View 1 (cartoon, rainbow, N blue to C red):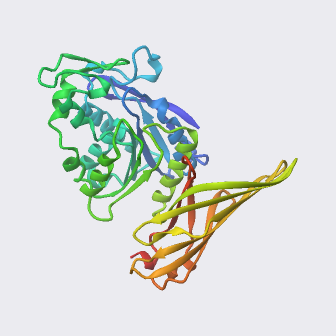
View 2: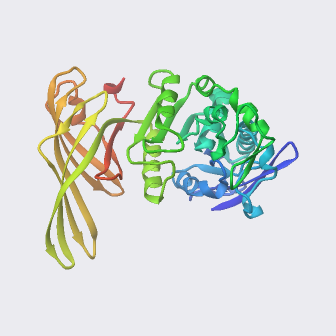
View 3: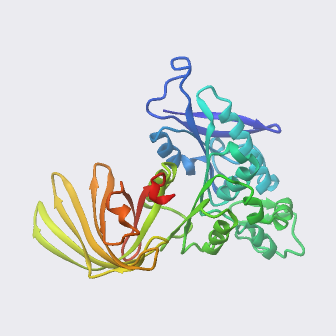
Amino acid sequence: MEKAFTCERGGLTIRGMQFFPADFAEEGNCPDRKFPVAVISHGFTGNHTDMAGYARDFARIGYVAFCYSFCGGGRNGEPEESRSDGKSTDMTALTEVEDLMTVIRYAQGLAYTDADQLVLVGYSQGGFVSGLAAAQCGDAVKRLIMISPALCIPDHARRGCLGGASYDPRNVPDVIDCGVTSLGKTFHEEAVGMEPFLELSAYRGKVLLIQGMDDTVVHYSYAVRAQACYQEGQCHLQLMRNQGHGYDADQGASVFDSIRQFLADREEVLTIHVFITHCEEHGAGEQWKNDVYFTGYCDTKYFRGAISPEGCDAQEHCAETGIKMRAEYTLMGLDPKGESCSIHVVNQRVGVEWKPTVQTDSAALAWLNHADLTAVLEGGDGGPTVRIFADRSDAFLL
């Protein structure tokens, strides 16, 4: 179930959509039921329709999710129904923070939402804005998720290249032509004086920061600096190799798999970067097998090492039942105490989840042998990245 909503800021109408879990009932039918809230913010020149996929994902896991259009946002010539009120030349990062705060108040004021279970999610400029808003909201924001956040905005203002434009930062025009939209001089004047990492650091809740390493809009070094601005252990930085600024459907699905792990308070304990070496096919017709061989490495605080010898992903293809996959490999390297060890991994799908099992001869990592593990597979050129998660509440992670 989904429906449109509006709220007001300073005489401007903010338009968006809210998405409901499958078990949602109208407040009159279920007056005591309250749902956690996700407020999702789009990027520069975007609108609320860009974030509808993430909103539906959140609704599927039990959230009431809100996506909205910033006042003055969007592209020239977009349909009015996808836009909020306001001129692009009046929009700034700080007016967008005000828009987000307005939507937060609207969402928290509804009878069916749990004001104490608020998650902020933002992509690109919306990620930057979500981080700034979380710093202002403090404990009112349970968790913060920033996807490719445009933390470069103040630097771009100082260089005279906001929104892809080119201008003299010492002689800023009243209207900055960004091609598909225009910004006002005020956007530059506000941004040039901002210290984003200092401002973000005021937030004390859990943070997930997802960033592509091939992003040509926002260099991944901004995400590294952002993680460092938070307290130790507060922010999990997920760097995605071969990932640019935008996300296609498969990449977006992988991102949300990681978001689900974060919301479930599960920690990424092993990150294995896989490189496919060759494939061997067997059989033909409606049933055939494909053995995919690979190497790779792992570099986390729990283990550093490489796949040795080659691993194999045995894929069984059947016209009636689809693909069944079972990857098996051994990592050789050092555990967190610097001791040599091996980790044998078998990863296969159980229902809708990847459920790896691990056997290791490391005393420091012996908990892995009995841990309830899940995995997220993230596509990439040359081979996937396999992220293995464990429950953070387990004693071995304290």
